Length: 280
Image (tube, rainbow, N blue to C red; front, side, top):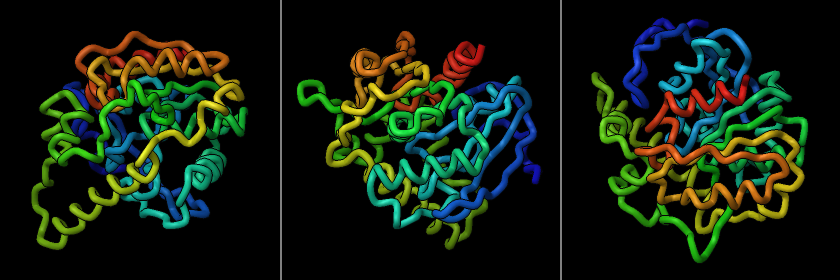
């Protein structure tokens, strides 16, 4: 059904005034219903969020929706989609993501994925080459260099985590804000939801993000565009060339100035422009 608030400005991730109609639906999977947002008209692009989760489409998604049909599922444990205790390993997540692309009818489509979701997308592309036509991988996790490890996000305080994830202070404030009008139960539910997101993301990268992806990337046949924020200290921008050297067909976009790890939140228009170029 159409979201009655679908025309409101994005909650964070940009200062633009793009408004679009938003359709929210529940997609049945073996892990339970997956809340999925669809918006815009045009060539289809799947969009997998990063560790901040997805409560509603971000500014980057809305920007893309001006001339694309954006399909953005909320992965289990990252917001309105409940967590699934059977997703215990990266393999479990890859099997789930394979099923989800089938259920969404987006096998062979173009996709965008961020951080831990980009790692999962690359894992799926390695074992199921037809899964993606192309992939814009934004600061993917999955490799680890002990000489250039990046910051251990989960050794930091919550405030420092936010600073490392997002460079833009306004976006950080919006991410941490409490919605107006919540009663005591609502505040508890919000706190639990944010904890579950952090725990779910951490389960994919902690204590180390290396699950052997480097040994499988040569199997990826999709064209991959690698995107980094110049201020990313979680997965250093230097990893872009490392990923590119392991992938058969990959390009590295110039690091985006002023953006940290969650590039699509810090620089939504820049990421949308890269996706449009990939779609061209």
